[in-house]
Length: 127
Image (tube, rainbow, N blue to C red; front, side, top):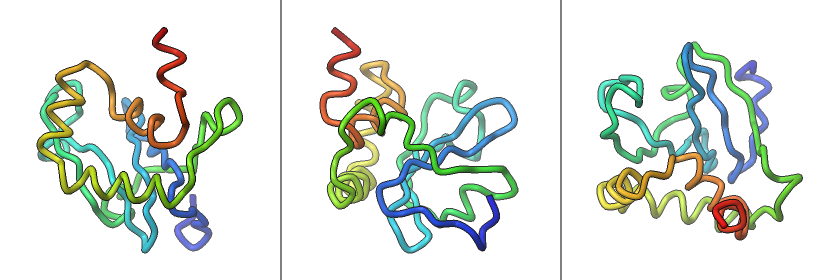
């Protein structure tokens, strides 16, 4: 996506195409995102410890391709954008505890993002 044509709205899910995997972030406005990133930019599978960060989107994207991908909006009722942003920013404040919780119960950050975006989306799928 051309940065000059970047038209994300706060609360949008951003999919970043890394060479071997997709990286996900929540756009919170002001050209900032919240994302779960492993230390030193390592691939998450190689380094399962990471941290929830608030960063400029261009620092997270770098030279990789990215797109807005609100993938479950057609399947589930999206949460209100201001609530998504508020919860994402709160996750940064609780980064260590949240990262341990996400890793400890074996769910991915994408699952957590889906929880932010859609009421009961993951509850229905886990039954």
